[in-house]
Image (cartoon, rainbow, N blue to C red):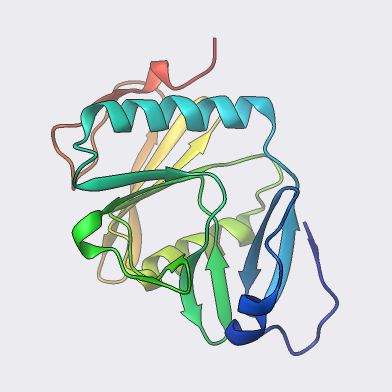
Length: 185
């Protein structure tokens, strides 16, 4: 991940004036813009499989299941905007300003890669917790595992690293995703 040379960081207002990223995605962490390459095929297929499983079991009249490139504003100062692989958010609670999401989704899913260092993972967890995301899944393709985290008292607590079984989002108890079906064949 490369970041722009800028010692003071970009403000929310400056960021709004910038052109949208054309290749890959970008996130902003404490005002520093971080460009990321496009997802690899395995990553994209896992995102597709989870999105399809969620969307086929949820009432799309009441929730959005979002993938792709969009901004989830964690905070405006210093600007931190994340681009999760998948969010599930109730339409009734969605706060949109300036074309970006300014409210906590009910579920965030990140497909992790070997380059996700422990420091980056800790920061992701802190950012989603500070926004109040009640459930967060880290999907690990190489280990074919999913870590399910629940927000309690402002911090994430792990349900554990799941290698098999069923994922059932706490906020959407009628949804069941067989872990073995999220991996590409």
